[in-house]
Image (cartoon, rainbow, N blue to C red; front, side, top):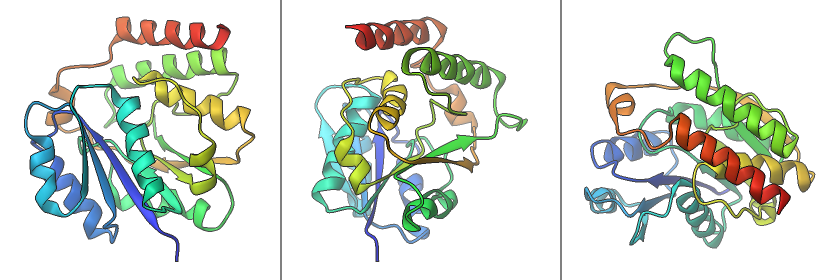
Length: 225
């Protein structure tokens, strides 16, 4: 039976982290790594009693850095499949089985969870932001995907070992797309549902139009340098 490890990069998610962990455990996935990325609200302390692996960054290093740390820990745990999810509760744990199925069947090396952009539940600004991210990913990394900014992904052990990413912030998600193409990995896109709660949509924005343009500029510079 394949060993599945769930990775949750988290920054100031004390309000929801326990319920997110519980929802994953209720789906039968108990091997969970929470990376507390320099939180100031006790996220790691709340996660610890739930029985998960908690790794702490002393400083906030960025979503990409936290995700990479979690994947490294999952590899040390001998994971056959590594799943990454956002820790704010927007992803549904009940979608994990569908996301990992192509890996379990050997059909591919990486699965990208893809939000359904026609859904009325997705805020319009999210749709616009993702389209811009998709366009930047295509222009810079020469690969079009439906949801380049989704944090809900799954990797085989082989794929995780081959990933060589330098980005530490939101450009990490697009850099993974580049690695898939450059390393010749087989990939699939699987539809996922999202839940944009009041909590998720009212958190201080860490990625906006200005920071998105800066992210695209960093991606371009890294690609040509």
